[in-house]
Image 1 (cartoon, rainbow, N blue to C red):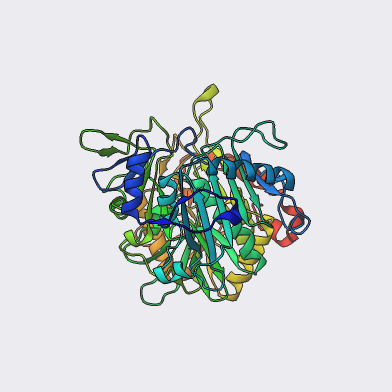
Image 2 (image 1 turned 90 degrees about the vertical axis):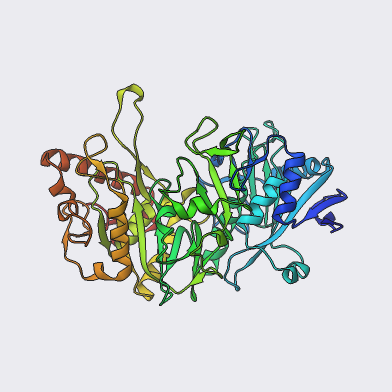
Length: 528
């Protein structure tokens, strides 16, 4: 529908505004007005984000304001921006949007918990962006839309127009600017849709802890009978989305959640999964969710039959699919559940020294949560072939607003209060590091996660790891016993000890930057 809604409060004077169009209408708009847009043989809208095919974290700015500056974790994640520069960029975005012949507005919600539900307004110039946020936010009913009122948070997506590099504080033609006081985000110089999704999450990462709720970059499922949940933290490539697509459990969400006094809730209304190398055989639930009403980004397809080649990475490795959570057959609507019975930290340890599963104390949980470790396989540049350790605090560093210790304190408080067990699960290498050992088979990791969920690992035998200090589970049904303790699975014991000590040293070195904001007990909970 063409709406006559008044957006003058946002500086918008465009006469033709399409508000909350349904997917079929947005498909029509995209095909008509966005060159290159197409439809896949399964019914997905295929869209392209232009030059930017991923987020631009170095171009993210937060307005430094006296009312919030003591709360924000300034530094490599949150670069400060003065209020005047934000106003300049905001006006630049509004001016650009006002040059468009028509705009798209999405009014929807963030957060399934009624007490913190955020009314979000997205103003954009591309139907692809409107459809993406229609998917990723929680879609209002007609009655809710009728009484939506003024939004709590506004995104001005002027990504088709660059930032001025000579404006104070700009480092490129891309700028992602957040004002906590104005409750606004301005996007310039990037048409990657994921920036909008993460802008909402970043704001929620500020809002929820201020209300004593834990915001979490994790997937979540729940038991179909008890409604007790499980949350899975993990960086890219650790299996967070794959393991949450469990047909034996209800899906709460795949990426962003909150933990309140009432339980957990999804922040989003959709899922945003990596599509590279996707097959129905490997991930049937996700593959089948990519149908009409979903968006596929930056993929290559056969123009004769519109069959998507998920193995073709000529545009980007970061091909993505966004789909409403209802497209998952095991989705629980509304996306809320009871307090977590289990908290799982997923890590892909390419050094091959972390055990398949270990149980953590609350202090260890805080240490390894703040560390946010995984490992990536290094390339062959300069002949270096060993893995590369990667640390992202709270398994979501780019989106944190408070100091990582604030989120860790909330996590410890909640796991103690609700008797949640915390597990460190290695989905990486076993029997040696990358190049010598082998990747942990997915069926073994699934067996471990199943054993966590059915409670059998709570009473399983353990042994204390002599280097990392946590309790290593030594038996799990469905997993070979010899794989449960890395030390026993390595042929070269000296090499194992040297590799383990090297990784432990990297943990200790990384944690130095957080030690002053944590208790001595937490600092001592890391590797020995």
